[in-house]
Image (cartoon, rainbow, N blue to C red; front, side, top):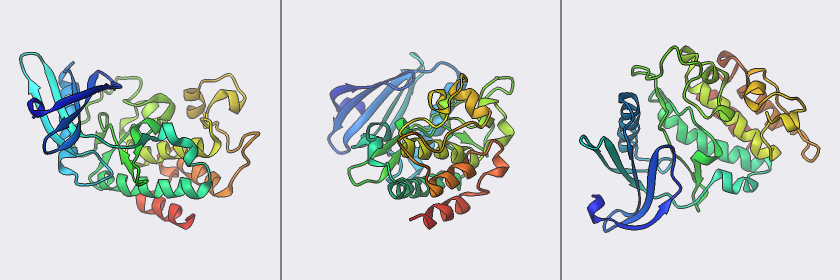
Length: 267
């Protein structure tokens, strides 16, 4: 498929991948990702992500067109839809008031429910992994470290920390407590994102919390802010944060239906 593509430009690379924007005669604008296969584990993660995205037929996720492994060079090649829009990181100021934040959360939960119902946990929800299309519909990207609960875990039990972006990770990820990983892990990450949108700063940032710990240490100690000097506390946002940011998963929303019901009541 890549032989039919016209390379337009290089895009910011993610992880160990080289990423290019290209145009295909029938598929239109696509993204070509190439990279080295470092290990069996990395290959299996790539295969799981590709197979999942190939099965999903949803605007909440990029569509996969092509996947190939070169056994000789030990490299992979992926072609998927180019998602027009901005990452949430680049348009966070568009989601400042509680109504727009809960509207975004409602859409994200609708999209995430598709994989949660398949017993899959994203595990890497953060503003960089959410693209807001021109229509306002979010697209959830980068399922490279998604946990497939019905398949064998790929994370070594002896690892001190599980796969994650530490400053958006739940306590069970930061301690590699694999038995506690489930959709409620994603609820925690959504709680961080919601508060960061509302406050304009990371809620666990020691510069605002007022201590000398790191963001990760504050996550582990459950120390975060609900307001700043410039942003007053909002009861709905605070209630959402206090329920999703519980250290123990069993103290968070029990399931995504309860999570979504809470969000819907705020709209």
